[in-house]
Length: 69
Figure (spheres, rainbow, N blue to C red):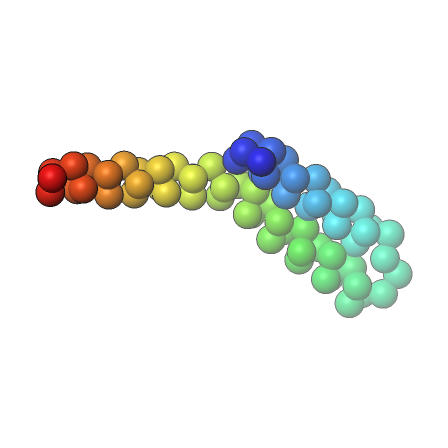
């Protein structure tokens, strides 16, 4: 699964939990699903950034190894 697919999955789950929050009768259940939807949406937005950071770290480590050889 690539980063775009993972982000899309998080967005899908966020939408699903938003709908569950709208359909819920109890306030506590509404709040739970709304909070979970927000966390999933936030995570979806961070996935590309985290991947870019990880790639730069890998490249930096690879350069260090090459310099030591």
